[in-house]
Length: 215
Ligand code: 1PX
Image 1 (cartoon, protein in one colour):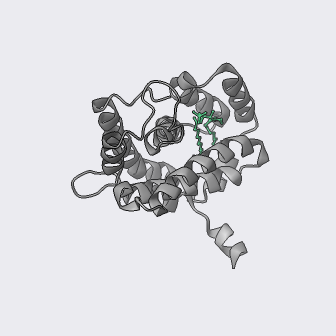
Image 2: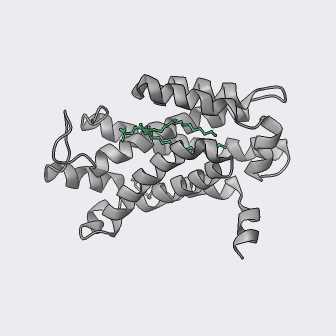
Image 3: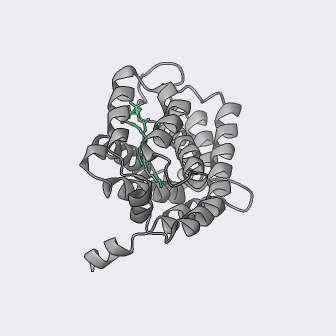
C-alpha cells in the first residue's frame, strides 16, 4: 500500500540512485539523475510544507527534463553528454541571454547541478557532525557556499528562513530512516564519493563547453 511504502522510505535508496547515474565510460544517465532528484524531493516534502517553494521549483525542472526524455528526440537525452552535444549542435540553448530556448535541457540541468553541489556540501557536514550540531546551520553554510552564489536576494532570504525550521539533527536522522547515527554516517561515507563524482563529471563537461553561466 501507499502508506507502507511511505513508511519504508529510506534515504539510502535515494542516494543509491546516484550510483546508477554513471555509465561504464563515466557518462551521466539523465533518467537516473532525474530519478535521484525525485527521491530527494520526496524526502524534502516529508520535512513539511515550508519547503514547498523549493520542491515546486525542483519538480518543475525535473518535469522539463522528463519531457525531453519522453519526447520525440528522447534518444538524444540518454546521457548528459549526449544532451549537451545534441542541444549545442542544433542551437537549442540560449547561451548569453534568455531568448527562444528559455527551458533548454542544458540550462535546466545546470540548476539541479548547482543544487547537487549544495547536497554534497550538506551531506559532508551531516556526516562529520556531532550530536549538538545544528542542521539549520549546516544547511545554510552549504547553501551560502554553493547555490546562494546564483540566487537573487529574495530567494536567499526565503531559503534562509526555511532553513530555520529544519528539524534538529536527531529528528532529521530519523526522517532519513537509515538507522542509528553510526549507520547514517557510514551510509553517507559510501554515498558521497559517488555524488561527488557525478558532480565533477558534469562540472567538467559544462566547463569544457562554457555552459556554467547559462541564463
Ligand atoms: C539528507 C539530506 C537530503 C536533503 C534533500 C533535499 C533536497 C533538496 C532539493 C533542492 C532542490 C533545489 C533546486 C533549486 C534549483 C534552483 O536553484 N532554482 C532557482 C533558479 O531557477 P531559475 O529557473 O529561476 O533560473 C529558483 O529561483 C529557485 C527557487 C527556489 C528556492 C531554492 C532554494 C534552494 C535551497 C536548497 C536547499 C534545500 C534545503 C533542504 C533542507 C534539507
